[in-house]
Length: 198
Image 1 (tube, one colour):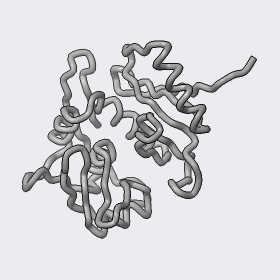
Image 2 (tube, one colour; image 1 turned 30 degrees about the horizontal axis):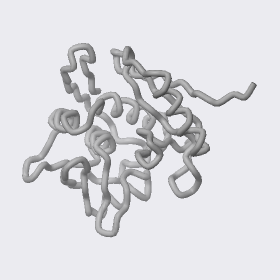
Image 3 (cartoon, one colour; image 1 turned 60 degrees about the horizontal axis):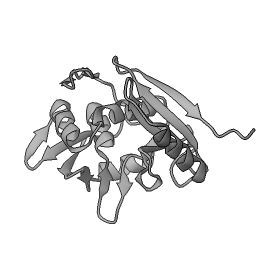
């Protein structure tokens, strides 16, 4: 379990022994490298996991993982991440990723919660959102994502213009808008927002 003291901004990693996700028992932990803001692996197990659980993005030579995907796989014991020759545990990875991406912890908590609920969740930068979420049982390529998802910390503020912009992005991409609010205990509450015509 990862926890963060949101008020002080200090990150504390408390990693409990987490069993592998059902269906991934046969996937052996594989090696991957931290390269800037992505984690890369060319291991055959990475390709197997991609096909089985839609983790990562397939390129010609390898599988590339967002930082949130890599931390999720690291805490599940499915990946071993190296920064150069040095192996990273989940605490070291969390600290490094938090330096590289603003609001990384909040994004990770929402990603982990959605994955644990059985949804496939992928990055959505091309839509101007944090994530796109596929309905349960749907893999990317089989159908379009159902939602775009914005994680926010409880107590953070958003202007009406920002809120309207998020709504407009969802509406223009024909997706539903989800806001995932992460509270101080690391629990997530989701709000679905939709356009209404009078």
